[in-house]
Image (cartoon, rainbow, N blue to C red; front, top):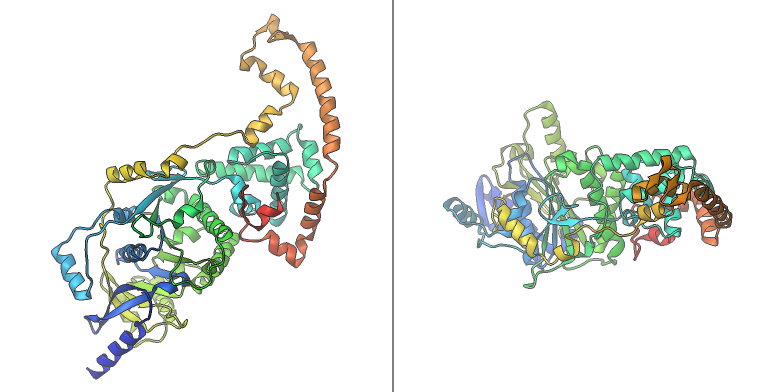
Amino acid sequence: MAENTAHLDTIRAGYTFDGATLTLGAAVVDGQVHADAPVRLPLAMMNRHGLIAGATGTGKTKSLQMIAEQLSTAGVPVFLADVKGDLSGLATAGEPSDKLTARTQATGMPWQPTAYPVEFYALGGDGVGVPVRATVDSFGPLLLSRIMELNETQESCLQLMVHWADQRGLPLDDLADLKAVVTHLTSDEGKADLKGLGGVSKATANVILREVTGLQAAGMDAFFGVPEFETAELLRQAPDGRGVISCLELPTLQSKPQLFSTFMIWLLADLFAELPEAGDLDKPKLVFFLDEAHLLFDGASKAFLESITTTVRLIRSKGVGLFFVTQTPKDVPGDVLAQLANRVQHALRAFTPEDATALKATVRTFPNSEYDLEEVLTSAKVGEAVVTVMDPDGAPTPVALTRMWSPQSAMEPTAPEAMQAAVAASPLMAQYGTAQERESAAEKLAAQASPAEQAAQAPAIGGSARDGGTVVSGVELGDIEEIRRREQEREERARRKAEQPSDLEKAVGNFMKSAGTQIGREVVRSVFGTRRRSGGGLLGGLFR
């Protein structure tokens, strides 16, 4: 008994903090729940990132939901990637029950049914929520090259192509615009422009063209376009001061994992580029929860994994916290896992030799403990988790088996009708609800088509052909040939003038040649290569 008392005293002391905290639950020692030994997480430590793990059905998603509720109450905006649709219940007040009352009393939780301010989003309109889109320009050539898994040479060529489009006032809103630019540069009409870029072979351009087509085939078309989503929308508070919970619906994620990973890396990179350095704050500006995080990493390219690792390391200084939610820690790459200071580990199963190996590896990631963690992690009940977090001094707290608090919102999804009503009432629908078409690269390049191409299109446009096609829209073919000859002469003169490199183009060429140097490699491989036309990151400014 004295030993148990000492263990409880260690937990009580280890989870007593000055300042605002989130309460995760109550400590469990020798099978007994101790409401007088609450397990807490300092609010200021939420941007040290974390992991919520556990086998299917052990309660990890409900732990995520409960933590998100407390963050919202503290005025901290939250972003949730809702893969299974379970988290939409945050918008609906929970319903009491005898079982719930017994649990909350045992853990010392002052439970009240509560609905939280939720904004529902959907990638490119694939779902009920407010559509989220981004322009190809915003992604920038570096991020696009990572998504397309281009090598360094192809990456540099894509940068030059995007630079070419930017210099000629050809906005890249969607994949059709990028495809139009690459198609133009690989066509007979654009071969002079391609040659003028220098160092870009037609074969490399064709590889890029195939990869763009592959993105379209993977369902990326709906995501790229305008109006473009402003990531600052994720930092909002409700009128009552609570943080808005942004819930991203992913109903078809299993069939489009690349779309999810594309969005996440852009969102994080854009936030990093736009947010100022914040240092240590009393509470984070935003906390991300990525449910089913293994889908973020499955099949990911090496460049993508490196980008995520760098993001996790650096975005803390912007006041943003990242929590990965998955089944086992092995689902998260080691370099990323090493950055996750706050751990909520629900029960694991050891049905196979591989499971047993994963269990032992998980135990080794925790500090020394008075618990037999192998036994605890395989016998923990639903809604219990082994917890250790970072204290304000940067040290891990004692490991504590914890009976987790319960969500105060609904534990089942919000009714579809209620979600639709909430989305329809959102002020963001007026701004983002309808996809827009504006004159961008595809339209401008079509308008600049050669007279021969225009003549070929003339009958379809509404002109009449008679006498076996010798007259088109009342213009003799001989006249068309003369017009085309004169136009080609003007284009040739303009082309020769345009091929004279500007000071900027010379600088870009010298920069590309310097990519072999350390500073060149660091800039070219920069993770945060987003480039909004009205702002953007480092390389966005360089290529404007």
